[in-house]
Length: 400
Image (cartoon, rainbow, N blue to C red):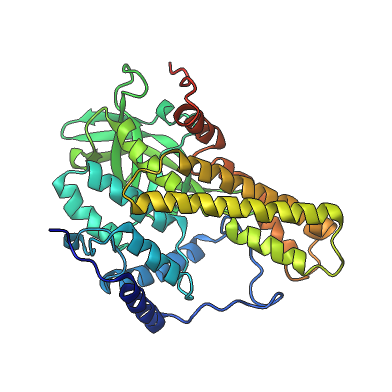
């Protein structure tokens, strides 16, 4: 007998009622009012990042405790065991209220790391971390990329050597978002240097306050420091912190990366819409070249939205979206780049001189930050390979 779910209209009405009790409805501001920030990556100090993380965490805990935070998860973990369509419906309602906007760290914890632990973790790890992560009592970051192992994740050099009943980890990770406010890091390490590079990896859960863990912010060309490098020097973890079998770290990492692509489909659309509004509110008529660029951006934004809807439809149907997620990621980075081009055309010198005018100089944050997403969340080259191999049937890239 199939489980009965609440009628969707009743579910949405209840969600709206709860949201109205904790936040004000989001209203569209008139052009020239409110914040003109279009930053791709936030430029917070450590104190600001901690304060904002605490603010988001308080809302996420309230949402979880009220039964709205882990809708697709089993009841034993605080969820409601509902289909993905209900989670998407709640998300649409949530976007209409002025609730704290989750930073990347929250998505990584709840949508990437928690499902990976559910798939690969021991029963003890599931009991310890799953509910805590879904409620955001514990936040986790990715310790994947290295200076010579970004796109080629299997080339990591961070070593984990077994000693007694634990492991000693030494290495250096880069481009880690949220490291300063994370409780755990999920680290891909090389445990067998003699094995083929995809076979000699193991994943560990590393406490970010463990002795030997050093976090240093990376200064970006935007002026901020959204990312960090993490040094691991003789960091000792017990074998209970190993996630998945020894030597199976590549498969564990792929579980994380697959979820990461699913979360990228709507990137950049908000700023694309803002660029269209910028065009509507310029003091002078647009030139033909400017009109063409704006129209092209609108059309491509619709294509990106439609692709995201295809991914969502696959998830609702319980299917693996597969290459559509990679196509969505490529469309997102393309939208961001074309948004930058439209803004450069519309603003000209106003983009590089801070005149104090609302909605002008602020766009430097987008223009300087957007190129980063060609690397973040899986490089464009990796997405092209996935599409070439899985959609076009081309030969796989040779592996050493």
